[in-house]
Every structure is written in structure tokens, then in C-alpha cells.
Amino acid sequence: MLRQTLEYELTLLRTQHGKQTAFTHQLQNQFNQSNEQIKQLHEQLNLINQQKENQIKEKDQKIKQLEAEAETLHDRERFLFFSLFLILLFINRRIEALNEQIQKMESTNKLKLISTKKSLFFLL
Image 1 (cartoon, rainbow, N blue to C red):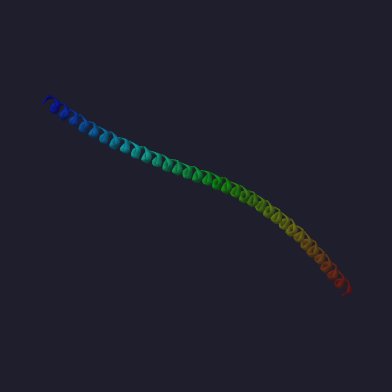
Image 2 (tube, rainbow, N blue to C red; image 1 turned 45 degrees about the vertical axis):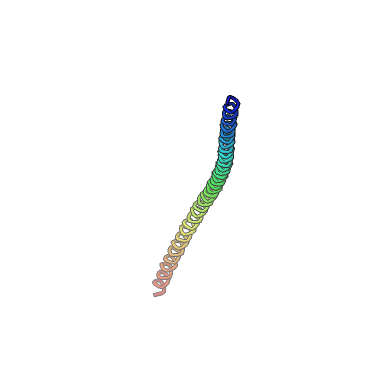
């Protein structure tokens, strides 16, 4: 009877040990799966962060490029306005010179006309 009781308790201990071992293996598997998921999520996060950093770098480069283009266009605009100013100044001075020539010609023509009238007057 004692032997049967001991064998029964041994069987119970073996069964309990088997169940604990199975439970431990199950927990270990779940732990390993969780670690693998964490590792995958960490890799995804790193990939997303790298993509965001690349996007930021690209946008920074685009901003610098646009700023450089804007500066170039601004320089061209200043040059064109200055060139236009010089052209208008030249045209204005040319108009003034032509007006002076016209006035001289008109003045000369009036003198010629007056002298022609005087000559005609003396001829009469």
C-alpha cells in the first residue's frame, strides 16, 4: 500500500512536472515570439525614421535650390531694371538732343525765312 501510494505520488509529480515543463516551453515560445515581433517593429521603426530623415534632407536640398534660384532671379531682375533705366536715360537724352537740333533748325529756318523776306523786301 505504501508502495502504491508512493508510485501514485511519483506519477502525480511526473505529471505535474510534465505540465510545468510544457507551460514553461509555452511561455518561452511566447516570449521568443514577442521578442521577434519587437525586433521586427524596431526594424520597421528604424526604416520609417530613415525614410523620414531622407525626406527631410531632400526637402532641405529643394529649399536651398529654390532659394538659390530665387536669388538668381532677383539678381536678373535687378540687372534688367538697371539696364532698362540706362536705356530710358539714353533715350531721354537722345530725345533732348533731337529736340535741341529741331529748335536749332527751326531757329535757322526762321532766320533764313526772315533774311529771305528782307531780301525780297529790298528787291521790291
